[in-house]
Image (cartoon, rainbow, N blue to C red; front, side, top):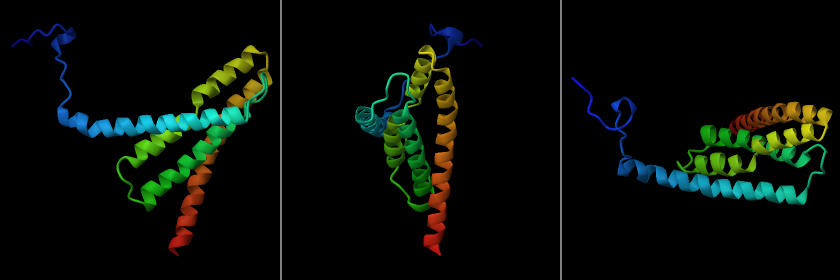
Amino acid sequence: MTVPKTGRPGGIRASAPRRSEWRTQAPVVAVVALGGGTGAAARYAASLWWPTQSGGFPWTTFGVNVAGCAVIGVFMVVITEIWAAHRLVRPFFGTGVLGGFTTFSTYAVDTRSLFADGEVHTALAYLAATPLAALTAVWLAAWAARRLLKRRQS
């Protein structure tokens, strides 16, 4: 038995997405895009309010990433342990808003720029401090949210 020729490697046919799949995924894509734009606009506003001097420690990006991760920690506890959220809340706020707000791509660009400017010590401090502080923030925020939840239930 032979596989029908399709013009694709290995004779594999591409299946067209079913209309019902698109109808269920379109709202998710829309809310992620809307939330991402909102989060990115908030991050941009923060960079305008607290600009970073060339060669200086990028405190604004650092603060945005740490604050965003703390909010992610609380948010995940709230929607998984407290509140049965609508199916679009997590993609809108978690993936969209907070994903657009936090910016690890700018963290990488900032680090590269610091190295290129000869600010090696600052670059290394920023390179190490950002993921450490971000992970600590998400952990502490989730821990605090759970602790408050237990206190509230008692």
